[in-house]
Image 1 (cartoon, rainbow, N blue to C red):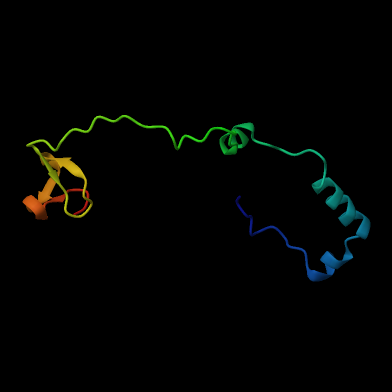
Image 2 (image 1 turned 120 degrees about the horizontal axis):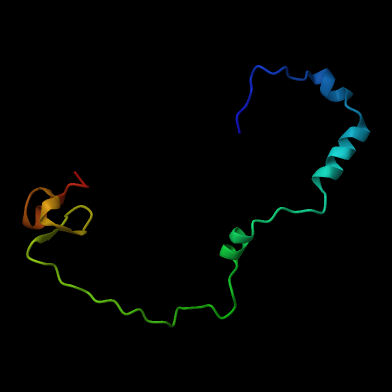
Amino acid sequence: MATDYDTPRKTDEELHEESLEELKARRADAQSGQVDIDEEEAAESLELPGADLSGEELTVRVVPKQEDEFTCSRCFMVHHATQLAKGSGASAICTDCI
């Protein structure tokens, strides 16, 4: 939220002069019964009972490193040969890590 630094500010004396009734009214408004709830945000944080997927198995096809690929010695990711920045073999470094 932007702040306008040119607006006049209340002094300490003005702050103390505010009536008690006005402060009580503000507090009552702030504590009203209406609550703004973002339904999408609430649904994302909701955890359903029985939704534990720890016993599930994921089937993924693993492809071995190809002839035109290398493993970066810094990030340990497999990249295509066009991503090779310097080095070769065990000391190869990709363009992202250089």
